[in-house]
Amino acid sequence: MVQQHMTADRLDATFSALADPTRRAILARLASGETSVSELAEPFAMSLPAISKHLKVLQRAGLIERGREAQWRPCRLSAGPLKDAADWLEHYRRFWEESFDRLEEYLRELQKKEKKNGRKR
Amino acid sequence: MAAKDSGAAETADREVFIRRVFEAPRELVWKAFTERERMEKWWGMRGLTTRVVELDLRPGGTFLYVMRMPDGRELCGKWVYREIVAPELLVVVHFTTDATGRPIPHPYDPSLPPEMLTTTRFIENGRQTTMELRSVPINETAAQRAAFNKLADAMEDGFNNSLGMLDEYLASARSEEK
Image (cartoon, rainbow over all chains, first blue to last red):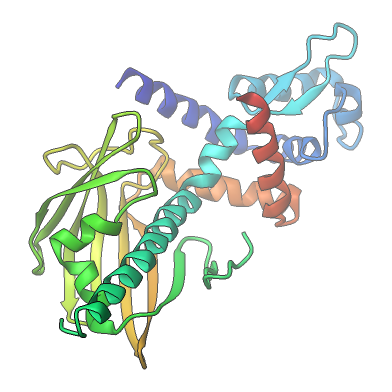
């Protein structure tokens, strides 16, 4: 249960981080590959410290990671939280699809047997 | 999220829609969907063993099941039947539950919606049966709804609605993680 709460907290952090359009734009930028902070700042009319602040929020939410390579510390998208939020319907769909695959097989088996037994139901 | 061969297609943002054609008469498909022993044969992902605890096919009745994963952990859930028109329509509310049937957040991902309203139509099609399943989340928490909406915004802003690109990226990132 502890783990469940941790995940719920993390999700909250994810949602508030995503609430800001600048941060969403940063994520979008990072979707095409890792980038330095100054490169990230370029399209925004914003100071580096302001961008850094946004990056910290994103980092705390687990949405991005910063490289440890001292000089330029590249930013990149981190998979976990965004994936969790995006995946829920897809997950549910997969559950059904796979069940239906099995249903298909089951029905096939069933009818094979029926034929053998002279089509009685 | 391209349409699959099976006919799966996403018709709206917030629903799952699956169309499948089964090579079997409708009566038989209906039985497979509504009889306890038959449900155990197919309900659940591959690799899981499903045990039906209860199947009470009437409006307000419950279908309660326990799925055992290969590692021994168990996942439980239930349907509560809303509407039953044999052999053509089944409307249920689908919950993740504990072993007693009490609804709980999904143990592996609390962001999953707790309740799905799932409508299944069985359409007679000669010796085939076309099944159309439509499933929408209901009674979500604000956080769960927010997850979806914020994400949709992010997509529109940044990814130009190209879910595929993000999916791909995240899939590769995740496999690197592991």
